[in-house]
Image (tube, rainbow, N blue to C red; front, side):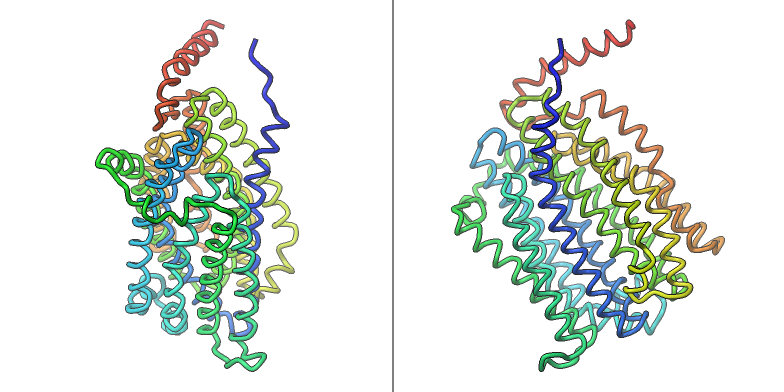
Length: 472
């Protein structure tokens, strides 16, 4: 008889990891919403300009997130196997790769902001405002990436509260300085969008400092034992880049694809650009909750794979996907119900408000399947399979999504919401293929000795189960 799944224990462990991460992301999104509300006082073009700069930040995110995903694969499995040296080595490698990306984007944003903005819009007035913002805000990129790397390690080793506290402090400082610097209050100079950019830099400093202070105060040595971070071997480096390579390719190619999409959206009307900027902020609410489940998948599945408890990892993975989709559905519905006062508070009115309303309706339907796909892909990665979800996402982006978006946006000059809906055309097809892969269980590919020793029995068991189902 198959053992009954321990739902209470599973939900408790999922909540312990997912809720602090979701809360941190909720705070960050709330801070972004407050930013937008404050910037809205400067006009819709300022909102659109800062939103376009955020798309450049998203491109950087795509450049380094492959290393975060690969790093968490190693962090989680080494944590399950209690391999301290493995954790130190993989963190050092991840940090170096991520910081390289951050420095490149920092230099681009500070030295060539005009070139960057020209990629995203052909509106000169919006570009001019964006240049003033980006030249300062780009200085925060290395700090943000350092904080992201530290948070990924802390969450993978089940220390989720430290990055939460850092994120809370970051939001408070950012909102306070925005209040002071954008409008020139409490004796501070009136700096407009430059003030918002400076607030972003200062709050990133606070986040990093607090994370490292709290880590040291609690005796958490993985972040501060710098000498142990660089004890790499050729074998380890080869294994690391072999696992990270597909994830990195996925994120970079998807990032380039999203940049093309944003270039198309940035060449629509000014009302559409402002609506898109506000929508991206609200989208952070959905992605914030998804990030909680993503981290839960990386820890709860990766840890079990690393420890050799493969059947437990498989059963947890299946349930995490549907739990994530159900939660996202509820959050999306709540967002739709309260959208109008929120959009008005963020400076939208008239046509721009109606466009953003339509975007939220489309996204509410698409996000459930979209986050289900993302959760499955992150689950596969944490278990060692960085290829399957990567190939699907890249292939469908380039053969379906990009052609549809560019054709409707630049060729047909279709209504903006029709162009936007094409961004999600591939999600249902990918979901079916991802589900088939999930139930096969072939995505479990351990990197630890304990996991590899248990792999043969796990696969033999699943072949027998598949045979019994076929006989029936």
